[in-house]
Image 1 (cartoon, rainbow, N blue to C red):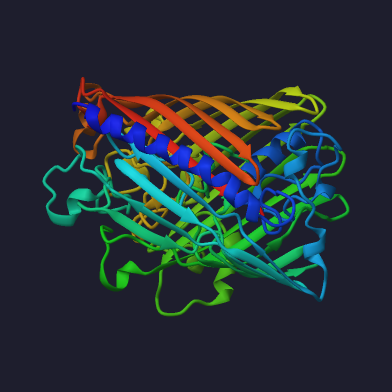
Image 2 (image 1 turned 90 degrees about the vertical axis):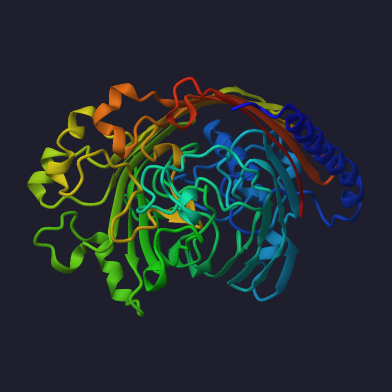
Length: 558
């Protein structure tokens, strides 16, 4: 594929104009801002947001209390009483929200308004911060809203609207016709992950980070559409990430770690309705599905910084009614044979185990997660093939510098969702009817897969691929600067050429990126540039395609 140099220049100019406009608007908006400048104050920490990223680094440096990072989003947000150090780089952006929590009095506060413009030069590429899908060409986002408290009741409305130009690019189509040509190239009938969202522009309004919650002592219940991140992963969470945004769901869970005598626990259970796209392989009544999931973690007394836990997620077709009693199956057995109601052949079950251990005195954390997609037919099979339909993730984060004016952190994370070579030839003996590798997130019976609105709920890199990402984040009073290097294996096989695997080249992406965030008055202005090259794109040997992903955004402070 030839790169359209004029389109590249237009994209650079467009994103540059976005940054300039944001910078010009900053003083005007700062003048009308009310109260002190705050990051994510009042509601839950927005997953993937600046406040969450900073607070995790600050905790690792021993300058904030331990909050637990395996069940997100979490409360409370960021009042000064949740930072133990009296001097840190973002102390002027870390306001106190105590006045908004006054019981029995109505308080209303605007959410952080903002806009974002992203541009891809050659093919779709996302930064993992849903719900927007970033196609080739420009993608624009707008967000805003308000949050109100009345006693223990919290109402937060924070929708997101986005539009993608969705410029044409070379895709793997094969013999598919009509809308089917946009489906996943490997399993077009078993997962709703379009390569491209139709032939024209694509737009949607998403409820975003909206929540109605009743806050009880240490716990809360309610309904929400906020993105969830479960497990310790920052770059590649396996079960739930922020990649697709959030599923509309009802929930019950802890607001922060709860003491239980021999340690602390966190947990959340949800039941919701994932959506699908117009290019889904399912139609009619089979389109509707429901999902229920649970996550829990435990930190034992006497072992500071240690979190261990697990998740479980069930996708099933909606049969016209949902009984809350079915939630008990989230803690049922993990095999199909002889389990009766606990596991159904027409649904899909997933589970993971994770661990995180932080050492604030050393400024270090290490963590990992192991996920199994679907269940084995019997215990013997589970013992024989513990790595079938699995993905794993390991990571570490280390504080390099921690002073009142500067906080610098190095991070590294690796994920692998490939089927082990030792198991590939025996795949049809474990799950009948297939003689080729199957990746995680792919479902039968519930053929939308582990997706919401056409995007993976977990990490895209774990869908039959592998990746690593390393980088450095530096926080100062002026903002943040980040530099990242990564490699991602997208594909190395298609079902019709699996037996000739040695003849198929690997489709691999290498990327180098930088992000700059600056505080301007009561505004946050940011820009990002990621340069990448995809080797053997679409599994075509020698088809090496470069891509530039440019981004510019601004967010207000409450």
